[in-house]
Image 1 (cartoon, rainbow, N blue to C red):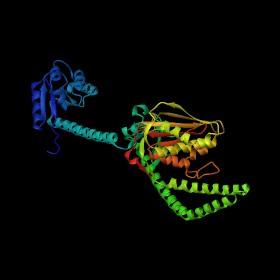
Image 2 (image 1 turned 180 degrees about the vertical axis):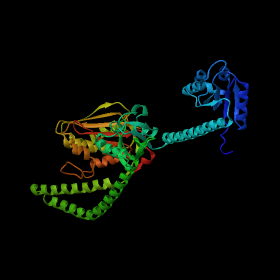
Image 3 (image 1 turned 135 degrees about the vertical axis):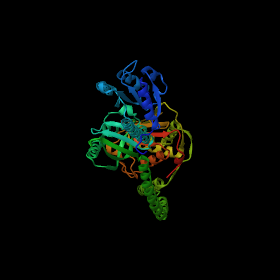
Image 4 (image 1 turned 135 degrees about the horizontal axis):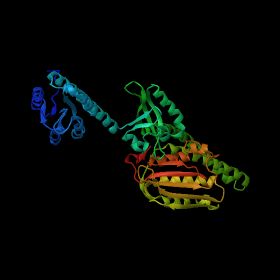
Length: 491
């Protein structure tokens, strides 16, 4: 029969044998499993009570009343629905039982159709609750396991939901950030006004699709996240918040940046190859002519000085060609275990011709971590050389350069943090912002590729280089102790 309730386990607590027998006949006819007890205490002691879906309890029992028994039944069988069986004269007491947690009442003598109708309502309600629990469990599992950020904000921008992926992304646990302002907690200050406006658009009903903004981690690092957002409404259709799903696109943006850079480098390399090829013969002829002219002017110091200046200009031109060619060439790392503190001292010794006639010193101030890393010695030597040469060029005597080696505590993998700082005038805000830009320089000579090359070398090692805030010029290099295999060769 299609309208019959699904079979249930029913527990009857009734001391009247005729009523109990009548109830059993009706219930068992519909394939329900039925268990009985003749007193409240007998019901509480029965192991079948906890497994029952429905409990039929007489309003008056030999040892208790339904109102007094209901709290014990709810504790023993928290998932069961309780129905009160009562007489016409005891209707008020049945209402009192309903207030204590019963879901319905039946009037004696029991009408089979009324009982079946009540059980049908209960069965359908339990089925709906079961489906709702399944949907909620499914949604919870999706939210908990999704490799995407799930964020729910109320209409004021306070955090209501924060899934494990977002915890991993930001470094904050949900317990830490619950009810905190999302914008003040996890967005860079410069983005907050703009993103609040985007949020208000979402609250107003506008669907947000693929909006990318920076998310600030606990350690102060920025991750790029693309957001899809829509409003959340209550049962009356009122907007109560915003649901946002975010995808971390930091690596994608970095890959795109590297792809664009590779295309640029390939174009630069191709242009420089052609330029050097066409210029080499002219430079060689010029070099030969200068050497012959210098021999003839050996007795004329004034003119000989002019030829030496021309020679220096030609050497500078050749160096410029080589620097651009070197920047455009792929970086191939040949790693070996090296002591970076010693390597820095070696580079300083190699620059002796530039600083031995000056009052200049390099001092390693602190070493509080292991300085032996798997690096490409030539590449990191080039990085150190460029930084030290810049300090020698920028600082007036006495030049003081200090270096610190420490563990980078906030990195996702064990890393070494190297800070090199001089006592010069330091970097302007513009220089600090643009120091690693290709062809940017504050010098009157050079291509402006030195620090850009340093950045490429450090990033090829899986690390990063950044300008500190001084005083003086401060460069901070972070290198991992263990490098990803795919970064062994970097273009």
